Length: 369
Length: 165
Image 1 (cartoon, one colour):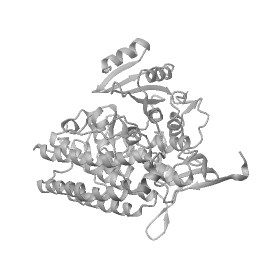
Image 2 (tube, one colour; image 1 turned 120 degrees about the horizontal axis):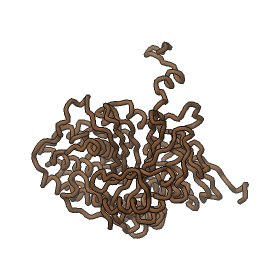
Image 3 (cartoon, rainbow over the protein chains, first blue to last red; image 1 turned 90 degrees about the vertical axis):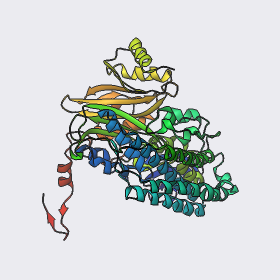
Image 4 (cartoon, rainbow over the protein chains, first blue to last red; image 1 turned 120 degrees about the vertical axis):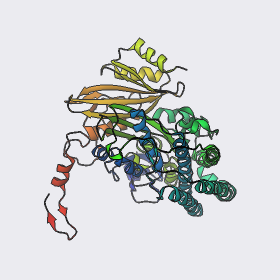
């Protein structure tokens, strides 16, 4: 290759086309990427080391900070790991509340990332609408948990406090509003928009084989027509009590992934309605004694759940003391953000790089943890 | 479609695992000798365990060992299997799984950054997250966070006065 036509560009960490605080070192030939290398580490906060220094309960305030888009997912996996090692039974009502929270979190995450995707192709109106719609969901979270983004609500043994019936009614009202008012607008502005179709269809394709080989899950895998979803494959919380479909695509491209995000939200609404109709009465927290003295036996567990971008897993080791011995976080986008960038970006044109990075849902804090 | 017991039988028939355990529903953990682990990985991959979730490393300084844990999942059996092995802390060298899953290169680089484990066959072990790191690898249990902070940074109170401790 001719050295004179090659351009090196460092893209990020502060750039609207980059999904968060990380950079990518590119080499371009004309406007086509010839090589790409993920430059991670800008956001490393040493979560795993910090967790080893803190008692079990304190970490519930730390884990949601690992990924801004998915705080509740992190709380849930951490609690599940604790319960798996300690063989703790969670009250059924708590399971239901957890599922409601996780589905609300899925909707807010998807609407946020659809907005981000739209911004990546210049559709800023949709981004503002996305942020606005997300705010309605954050209002609900504030009412339930007292916090908007980091809720510290799901904790070992159950949830921090009960949900009032009035709040459940409010959630149902909001679901109606989303379905009847917000989503039709979104449909018109984005999914029936020829601009969006042109920018997303056939772009950033990852085939089924490639996805499985590198360990990509969630919409990236499902865009190839395989309905793999941990909520169905390894049911947790109250997902074995509800009926829903797993949306899939056909072509494995950005367009299919974003359509899956939209369909996923509709399924979440369906799930939330069923859960609220069926929610049993009872306690919301198993009795584990003094929170400052939580102890679980020696052991280890790998737990995982379906985040909006696929498998989110924690490998947790306990040595029987007051603090976790080791917690290892497996974020949904780790393989895509590090390996995928190098393997799949070459050949892409510079204008499509944001389409690629954002439609795959890369969240840098997951490998900078 | 195998269940948890079939999977453990399959492991027993082909390898000499040190410890087999059904952790809970759809979760299995198997401990191998370090010579057998890479073989077991490629064997499982050809038996539908094609999804590599991640590779975890745990430091056990009292035993003088690192524990490496490979988490695999099968979309046919719907079982999660954690394959464990222990290697000596010194010199801390193991085989790469890069030939089986190319993505393993990055998980290994991460472990190399934070635990200092070297993977034979993975020749690209340059720093992934850390930059110009001079101390011992930070996720090791004997890395003293407090001492590192005190040596590296100076403490200041609200008035901007320096003080030590």
